[in-house]
Length: 303
Image (cartoon, rainbow, N blue to C red; front, side, top):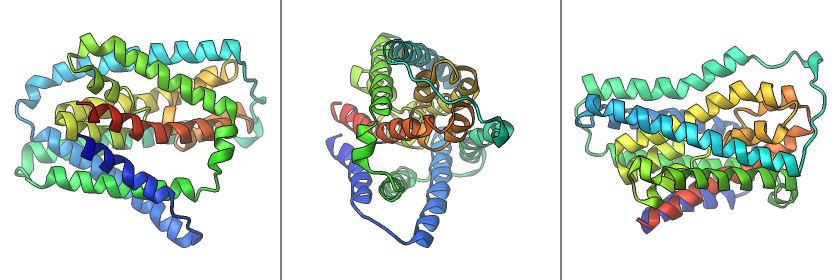
């Protein structure tokens, strides 16, 4: 397991160590990352579709996903509410002249990962024979993805020092991480896994393409599917609640999105919370994007 943890973490830090200044190359990397994400998710679905007794396990998986989503939501929002109480953050008034963002478009985009997994699942269940190298292919694809994401993070014009000095973003990231681990601890008797595996499940922070494959490699395709669904539902729920709460409790709106606050949910945060929320969201999402593979790698290595 320790070797597996190093394989998860090494490409991310290798990519982050390499500076790039070629904009055309960075654009190519952006599209390659997007393609790899959907390819990895399709492989995750393929593994689920070829799992023995899939139909019989669907009810159990639904219960496990529901438990994770609900307990994590309650713990995260409670922790972020306490942060807001002791360290309030006041957003700018909403910029109505900007026209907002296309919420329908964002919700449809949030469903694309589910569609990719569903396509892989149906292909594995009905069409494709078992591919012995599928797990290795998924692992190598994930390593390449993490390397490219490391490059993106390093070359996004973000200073790690400035991000760490954004105390509000750092506070939100720490509270989200700690409350997620607390939720994981509460779920240990419910999920029936060793404590370290449950804490790994709780450490996805919305990064579904990472958690699905990493957990799937370590615990099997069923748990990989549970990890994926838990984190993709975080993204979907975040899109729904950000406009409702960011005006009065920005930390709760930014924090619940987890790692997605620096990319996918950022337009909604910007549109509803104003420019003052953007650096906080980027700092929080960036730090959680680094914490997620680190924590998952550490917890799985303890098994």
